[in-house]
Length: 89
Image 1 (cartoon, rainbow, N blue to C red):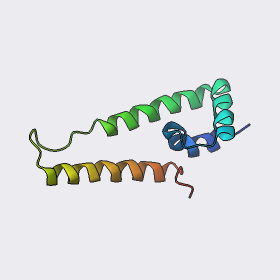
Image 2 (cartoon, helix red, strand yellow):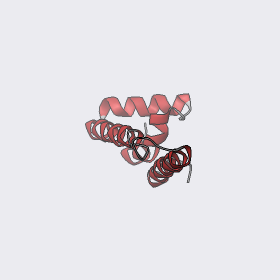
Image 3 (cartoon, rainbow, N blue to C red):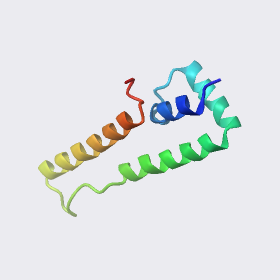
Image 4 (cartoon, one colour):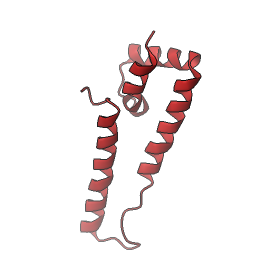
């Protein structure tokens, strides 16, 4: 069984579906037993959903500003992944 620390370090990868099947099952089992990690998972889902909902610039964005805004969103998501340890570091 994995620990809470191991779960929180892999939560972003878990949400993205990039955790190998065996590890994913272990995480799922941990969630069944740990209400703290279930709450943490719900919070992280909300954060990721909010980041995906960040508007892309003006009401009538140009192609260049949309690309820049999308790049900013991707940088925010990548920084979040790194801060959660899900990038393998």
